[in-house]
Image (cartoon, rainbow over all chains, first blue to last red; front, side):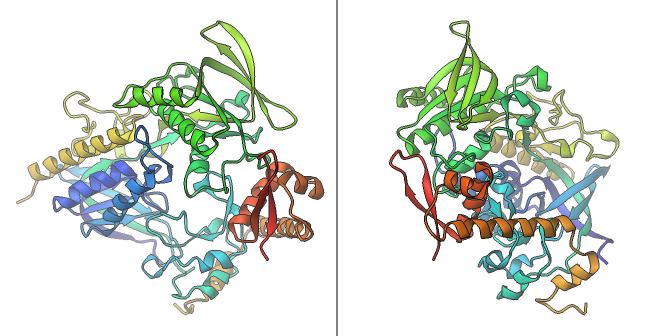
Length: 435
Length: 92
């Protein structure tokens, strides 16, 4: 049985292998430190690896992320645990943290898998694909997505019928249902929390009709629809497969909204919506795209120009707060909104609505530190103990924070934040080196 | 471990069994797959036409048709004159 803890030692533990965690890992590893990168998903790369393009440059997101995750995966000083969770961390001395890690079985020996996808073809099961945000199915034996890293099959054991079809066709015999959960006790000298953020669940605002009205989708679902590895052959309504020609964006869904307990700005929604609107104008030249907003916050480098560019392309901006969405028999949607500039309530018909959902804290790290010594801000993001002086420092000396674990931010800021966290971690390691 | 490489599914099946809902969902998928492929044997159809023929909701038909396209069972056909709806066809 594998229920016994295996003891392992690394210089640094990084919780979360998104773009911030990966960047911090590379910085530490390039400085000669041994890093354990722990990721709960089946692939590293976080949310960025699933994006279509990035704002405001419209560079291909996968083209930026893929070389970076390959470098992380190949680095001799970085060990990656995917499908793993840090259950608890305690600090026993200045340079000794003890963490317990649970590593779920993938049921595939990654080093032997050639990603031939024969198992996927043989698998009879079809379930909703979480990496396509439920828009399409996937098999129980599957490669998470085409640019996943590690690019290897995995078995979704909760939906597997254990028919053995995948094993029979596997040319390298890398599928192994005898794999079991592994438990590790890690000793590390420093910790970086790069646990990211979670997306607001629009089911919390029933008046927008998400899931009830199938042509109301989230911004991440639209992100998948416009990505090169999209679920459909083109952009379609999930309600009936129609090519949409009048698309609405509702901004600030679950952010700047005290009624759902998240009064803060998510910082990214305005710009990713403007980005998607521009991409939609390119993909569907005849489509009308309207963005309903409270304020456009184009605060970053090149953001205002990007906003103006969208206006120039013909994206329609309406300063209006959407109160309610209702559905017509043909699947079209009626948006009832307050036109703020005219001060009147209006209605408009669209055939597809995208809810630009906000960013919230990642709840899974709330109780990770023993004795609750890691402090959080009022919105449950990890608190920075010295925001102006050393923004990556937390309430525990030797524990640093990177990326959106501190609060909503865009990709360049996440990478900068990871640089700061890794720099502080290296400094801490040097100061606490044992002779 | 006595379990032979390439035949380990049986080991886990004997150890923990397969939940009934997983078996039921597989049956349901196979039933819908069969219904869709039967309907497309005679002519290419849109999601709306399939929905009417199969008495299934359009969102469900969309989901299953798109999944079957991904699995290589179906292919995307022509788009209508209004550039709104594609037809779907069997992969021969």
